[in-house]
Image 1 (tube, helix red, strand yellow):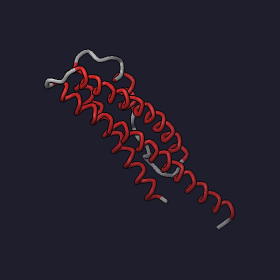
Image 2 (image 1 turned 135 degrees about the horizontal axis):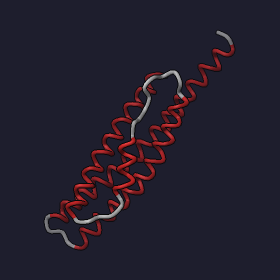
Image 3 (image 1 turned 90 degrees about the horizontal axis):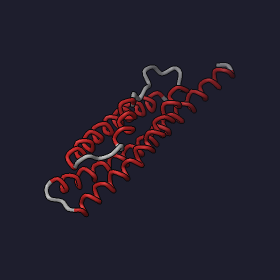
Image 4 (image 1 turned 180 degrees about the horizontal axis):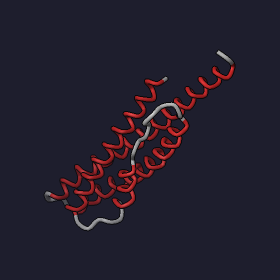
Length: 146
């Protein structure tokens, strides 16, 4: 093994570790958004079936908190995508979160009615869960490649 081979191996592992760290950071943001969205869903159900002003306020507060975590997740997923581009010799490492990013942009545009809010919350929960699943898959593949 030449000196260049050792440096290439070290750099590859460094890039993989950086990608794993970025992926785990994105997963943390996604999981926080998921927890807040689950809470908003619960309060939304209460609001649908006889809630009052307080339950509506709590539901919207939880959804607002979730939106902050969604913004964090968007930023963290973009960093993760950039780190994945640095890992050149592993094929098919792509999180494919385009649908999630589009959702995040339109979800918070405004709420028309409690039923519509509940529908959007449920859609958000599914998209977040899908983004988590995809990110976990890529992080696991990265870890196995070390």
